[in-house]
Image 1 (cartoon, rainbow, N blue to C red):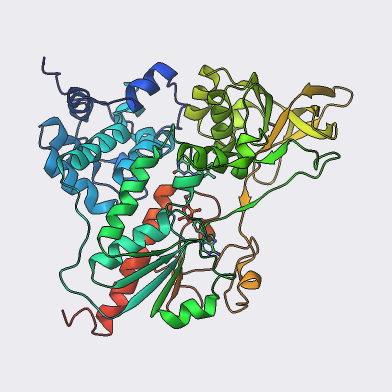
Image 2: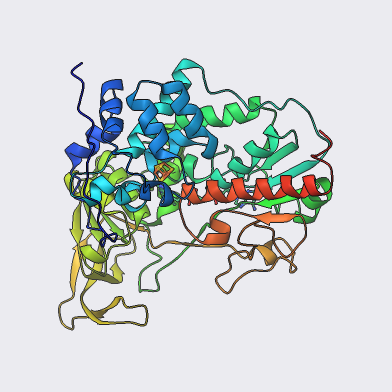
Length: 477
Ligand SMILES: Cc1cc2nc3c(=O)[nH]c(=O)nc-3n(C[C@H](O)[C@H](O)[C@H](O)COP(=O)(O)OP(=O)(O)OC[C@H]3O[C@@H](n4cnc5c(N)ncnc54)[C@H](O)[C@@H]3O)c2cc1C
Ligand code: SF4
């Protein structure tokens, strides 16, 4: 292989300029996210200028030591690169696949900022850890000493699992409860397989089981077992339940057949990819094949729905969003992918109502952007007289998620929540107002990202271990 020259000199901006919208096209995306050859990874890693002001690292929620593992990858020292990468990230191969890098590490790479195109940090991270799995370097965290203290974790998403991994490695007895039949949270049933392959998630769950973590699935806390009972069983409890209450529309006809929630649609599709029997999919209720699909919303969940519908063979896929492209909340990279795949975006459009007992169309109101509101964002305003009907056989509502009312559902009024319903927890330790009860991930932050849930889970685990050390339990090792 011809050795690629290392890019040594970049002109550093005095101040970080405003982020430009990323310009990645699908071809770039495929190159980055497709099968990554060793040469490609080394070539990309070698492009890192080792600038000494690692904005990439400071903009990674886990503060991954990116420059060091890029350097080691460029030198072919992959096992060392893996050791450094996994020291700060519980699931590096997952973050490498699904972090919105354009908003995090890569968007802040100085090479990107100086106009030469980012080092594809996420892809290299994925490559390093996939190689580590292939080579058998990834080992279950079996502790050398068992401890008596036990932790009950409610929710087997990335937040709960990251905490479980750290606590188990330290020897604690860890039980994870989840109401689904499989662990993984939204990594298993929310995020589509074309972004995050399910075997990649399942091998991690297996590894956690191999380390001695006990999983209790099909266990809905608040129904199958009470919150108090969980507290009674364990010395510490971590709440990592995510946010699952779908925001709804208040429009005439919204109850018609064929109008479905994004989470139901994506869960059915993911279940199907596991080979499960999914009657709602087989009946066509949650299957886009040969249908005119309209997705309402402009976030990443909407992008997952439109791209899933394309893959299921929809006859057309339209995405309705009430603002314009520049103001979409979703990742621009995801929008570009969806456009490349044939999704038709209908900007500045909002649903006014729905036609048919079985949905036949969406009554669309055209909008324009008016004066900025208190947050500085331009508010959409209706253009009178410009309504029309967009034909649809299936409408998917992807309007975001809110927390369930846990204090009521769990009969635990002492569990304090914010006015948005998210759990109040200490910013650093993640301990709630109830001593020894912690909360992490989306249930604290609101709908967020896998990488932030991992960070929270790791920090809560560290805080528990710190508490044990202060009380003398860990120091006794
Ligand atoms: C469609 C979709 C696509 C996304 N794509 C991305 C992406 O590409 N990149 C990214 O970084 N983030 C993405 N996200 C966001 C990301 O998935 C979440 O931020 C992350 O999973 C939150 O982790 P968590 O551990 O807090 O909760 P979750 O992953 O939601 O896990 C919570 C778990 O708690 C369980 N649970 C809830 N209530 C109970 C109860 N009462 N009893 C027992 N168990 C319970 C649930 O079954 C679930 O398994 C996406 C989200 C969605 C919806
Ligand atoms: S965890 Fe996410 S933000 Fe951090 S380096 Fe990896 S891909 Fe970038």
